Length: 290
Ligand SMILES: Cc1ncc(COP(=O)(O)O)c(C=O)c1O
Image 1 (spheres, rainbow, N blue to C red):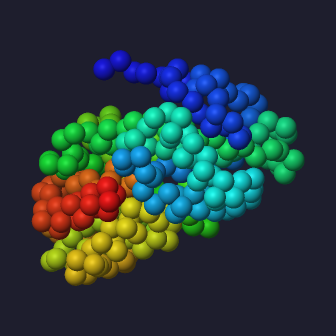
Image 2: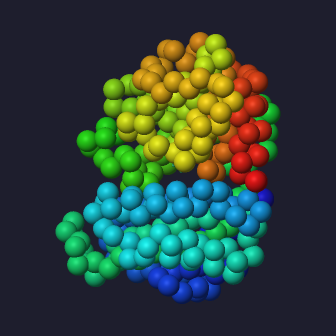
């Protein structure tokens, strides 16, 4: 399939208060965010014209910026309105919406208090993140060479673009090995998360997931935990060490893009998508399309 570059598409992008033609949504090369990573983003799926958990995503975006020391100059209500306008202008009913904010090009250097803050929103259609077969077979994963940083060395609770530098290196490593993603451990060697999705495993009917100490506490993760509890499935947030994972009955990932994706393999360990993954997938499909 021919690659359609993301800067050469039809449609419109909401940028600093205006809908602009897609190809004209440009910034200068001396933008602070490009040099110093001063940008944050969010990403949500759109189901039948409605963003799932829109306000939670918008609030996370505003909080991510705050953690990086800047304030997005719009209220949550205004961001939500802009998201709706972007979806409508592009006629997108099912897909993905990406709001993002960054420091502009007024100053060059680490100190950037004088820079302006920008916000843009783009949306596009996005098929299953890990491909069509992932839901039935489960994805292949490898161990990530780079760990998720400690919460006192990086703003791990922000959805900060800079953190995805590690994600991209890890994901490329996985792809080089024919895998779909890499599983990161944290700074102490405990299971953390995949490059853009949270980790769950089932053991003896109980759902286990790492504590949200240095991972992104995903909105899907929180939704799935609530759905599991509503179905009477016990949920345990705890420290998980890698050797424990080989004893899991089922493993899956969660994320707005990934939704619920079963894992069929991590390194040498094999898993089969099982009943709890299926029950939660059905429940997630029901709430996202309600
Ligand atoms: C590193 C990382 N962890 C977890 C997630 C899942 O978060 P959410 O369910 O809010 O999309 C994402 C996706 O945004 C992510 O990038």
